[in-house]
Image (spheres, rainbow, N blue to C red):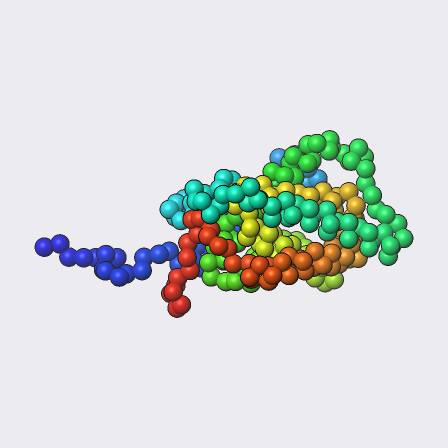
Length: 287
């Protein structure tokens, strides 16, 4: 008579620990970004066009997909297409995504406007004055932003959302996203603080905004990220380590996040009604 193995015992919870998923993703995202950044000079790809470090999170998602293919499909539900679920149908299913895209230029307008007033000079850069064709920069920035967002917002955010609330999950992702930009912490404390404030606030905007997005989540998240990056490129000079524009950007992101938080509270805490493919949280105390 065949004896059951330990893994086959009835009632055994064989689900992969969510911390293991998150840990593998983060390890590869951090180490992969470092490796890609190290090889970029040898490729000849200008960092103004795209930074190869942006594909570290995508490498993390690929690694998780190879280890746990049955789970990655559920995590990435709605990343490109809507899952097959009637709850995701309807003409207004991506209205939150459009509002998300409109929030990006609002952030840049607030930050650049405040910078012009306080500094007495608008730091505007014409697209034609850039060293590379602007159309190429836009396309490469979108691809690079999607390389980040498929990890942070399309994978890690849904993973943490199974364990934490609609506000706590994006705050945690924002802190990790900010820490992932390790080179920022070599700058002055005020610069690093402004940057971290910006990543957390933008993560809240993205997290709450994507709660209502039924399909093409990667395109909306990548589009938001791209618009912010392009806005900074054309209106700010924070790249040289100047503290004021980075602090103002962080403050603008915080202001932009307030309406999203109020909207989520007004809509009942931002709880998604029926998210296709969403893996429910394990019972309290489960790993």
